[in-house]
Length: 408
Image 1: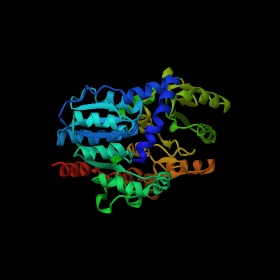
Image 2: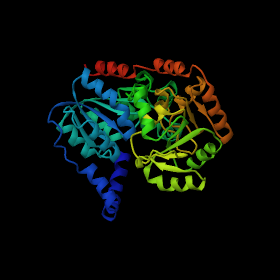
Image 3: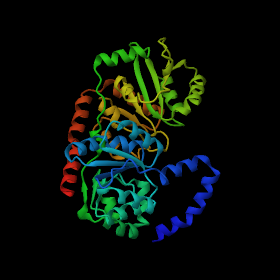
Image 4: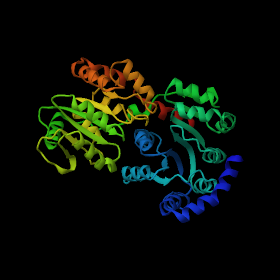
C-alpha cells in the first residue's frame, strides 16, 4: 500500500522530468509504453527477469537448459538498455524467446503482460526485489523463485530496515536458490522462511566460455604484434586503477601491458596517462604490428581471449571501490587472477580463490610485484583451478531439476 502510494506521488514529478530531459523521456517511453505484440496470446511462459548485461549473460546456460528440458516459451525482461540489446542480439534467432523492457514495477503494465500470456513461473536472477511484480505474479497463480540469490554487505543493512515488510512480501515467493550459505543466512535474516531457502551454488560456474586452440592463441598474439615477451593483461579497469597498474608495470622487465578499460569512453584519458608515464603504446583497433610497451584496447568483446593469452591477469574494479568484476573468466582459462581489496561483488569467489592459492589479493605496488613473481613460479595451478570448477559444477542442472518439480 505505502509502496504504491509513494509511486503515485512520484509519477507527476517523473512526468515533468521526462518533458524536460529527452534521454529520460526515451528511457521511460521504452518501459511504460512498449508494444506487447511479440507476446503469444494465452501461451504458457516462464518469465525470467534480468537487471542488466551481467544477469543476461549469467542466465544464458539456464535459459538454454529450460528450452531443452521444459519447452515452454520464455519471456526475458531487462532493466537496462544494454541488457535489452544484449538479449535481443543473443536470441534474435530463437523463436521461443520474447524480450521486453522491465516496466519499472508499474502495476498496470505488469497486469497487461499477465493478462496477455499465461506465466507459469517467474525467475528473478540474483536478488532484484520488485514488490508489484512479485505480488501480481502470485495473484495470477504462477510461482516465483529467486535464482543465484545473493545479498551484499551494503544491501543487507538496507534490507534489515525493511525486514517486516519483506517478510510479508516473501510469502509470495516459492523458493530462494542462493549462491552461498552466507547469502542463505542473510535472506532468512531479512524475512524469508528458512524452509524455502536452499544453497544451490553460483550460475557463473556454468557460463559457457569459448575454448581456444593453441594455434588460435598464437595467431591472435601475432595479430597484436606480440612476440616472446610475457603478457600482463589488466581487464575491466576503472578510473583510478590505470595509474596504479602503470606504476607496477614500470617496475617489470620483459612484459607487454595490455590495458582493457571497462568503459571505452575512457580511452582518451588513459592515452594521456600512458604518455605521462613515458611508455609507447598502440590501440588495438589500429592493427599495428610494431612492438610497443602498452596495448590499449579500444574494442568490445575481446577480454576473454586476452585472458587466455596472458601470463599475468589483473581483474579491475578492485583497486578502487567498485566491488570487482569476474574472477572466473581468467580462472576459466587457467590463469591466477590478481585483484585489489574491493571485492564486495565477488567476495565469495575471491575468498575461495585466495584460500586455494589460485587468486591473490594485493593492496600496494610492492604486494603486486611479489604476487606477480609468485604467479611466474607457481606450480600445479591449473590442476587446482580444475578442481575448483569441478566442485562447483552442475548448478544449472540443479536449478533446472528444481524448476521441473515446481511446475510439473
